Image (cartoon, rainbow, N blue to C red; front, side, top):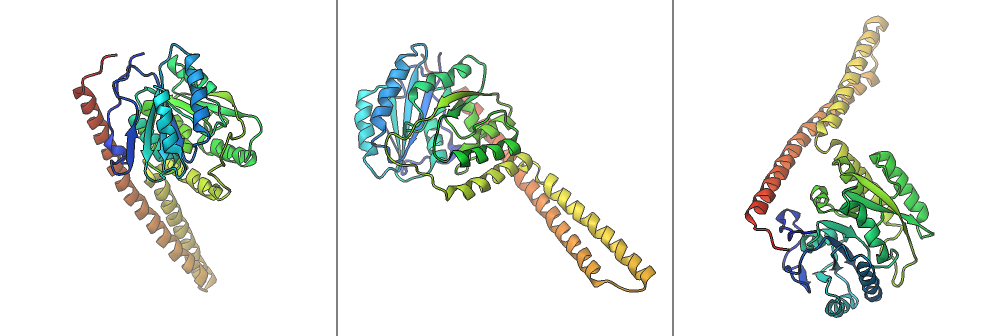
Length: 345
């Protein structure tokens, strides 16, 4: 399958020469079908075995050309030196380095910028998932049966209870037809273009892709204990994850039409204020007494209603600006693609 080197996309805003160093691998290395993106933070002990297993998995699938793009996300151990040694042994390995830790979301975007495949695979380096499952993830996409394939974790693992709650809440909010949103996944490159540039939003890539109309599939993937090292995520990440989930839900539901939410709330409060005001007038006329709490409620409803409507109108202006920026970026990408001659495969 022929492919073209991906254009550099300045709109990502996550890669600068001062913060990223790339070595190993050449842009002229032939056609690549699948790019495996591997964020690595202090994974020096896991990477040699990971690469050995990846080489065996790729050798078993001769019809598909793979590459592995490892993004060293500001490791403080010997990860970078280990990777440089491995790059001399495996010709499919390409290396990118963040000089400081930037998180998985930025690591995936950096990997996307340096990848050549039209199909991307997010795969951690801790060996809780085995590289032998990578070909199974990409088969439905290469066959044209799906745009994104996610793994459904099989086996006993830490934080299973938290994971179940997270997945149930996610399915309830986003109505996605998969059971596990936070696992390894393969997806078409263009899906990266619709993911907002926000920390940790890679966890909601499936939900965002589903809203954008991309087709999804799910396959069972075994999960194993970590080969070495320790998890980078603790209990303190749970509140952050819940807030991120609400933020993503708001973005998908009301990000393009914020007045739909704030205008409805404002109109409802105005209507309540009018009804309470009429009740206060009736009490005054027919009861002969005034009731101060009713007047206070009227004032509160009208004030909050005004604030909500004003917020919605301001949000509409911001949404309009964002839509214009997206359209300009699409036009720039189209122009860049049309003026860049395709490489020969």
